[in-house]
Image (cartoon, rainbow, N blue to C red; front, side, top):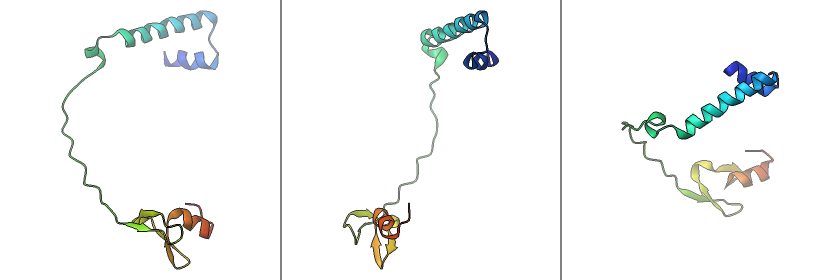
Length: 95
């Protein structure tokens, strides 16, 4: 079926092969749409550990545009602590 599908999308099938492929494809689609839930789905409980608590960083004010930004995202430019947008504008570097 995979080889036939690849050849179908490349336009390499004869008209008979294309018709056969389309019948198989329609059958598969109908099966997916009409199959009972328990045949298509599996529900079970899982044990996943809780994620680590997110670290919260202080907010600083950009010394150029005055917008707030997370401390770890700050950059130094012209002896100022600035946000990444101002840093890019002041230095010409893309972030």
